[in-house]
Length: 193
Image 1 (tube, one colour):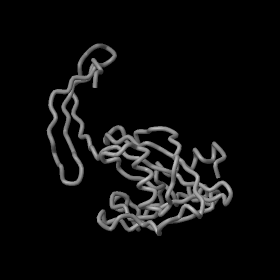
Image 2: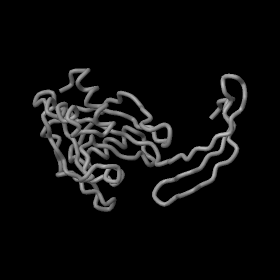
Image 3: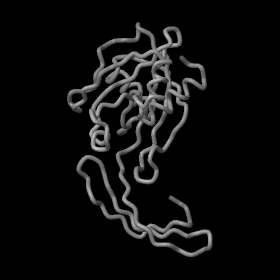
């Protein structure tokens, strides 16, 4: 936070219920040199990591399906979303986080995930930066059913989907989660599956 064109005036916490919501009052210097007073609400849920597991031999990917309340409130009639495996970093390094999440959610014990980039998904309202990974999987790496952690109230269905069919699902709007679309497109561009 060292941009000389930004002066933070006040930060007021609005909620700490599940994550942190702050109202930030600040001044921003325009191109003309004048200062504008602005106010924004910023939602801080921490940074995350996401991974696309792919099998180049079988031409398949591992995705998850689970209920997402915000999508339900915004017109997703079932609230169910098909997504890549993902989770919050908490205190973990991104690579350690995604290895743990892959095992918890999908049941696959992976090693050597490849980090492909970091992206802000909703920079106008959410502080979260997501670390994106890909990793090959094979049937021998399956050590459990996955499904997430009961303690975190996760009820995750694990899906093994033909890669080309997953791309069709994107074009039909059946897969409409941004991190999933981004990683599927990365896989397509790089001939992973």
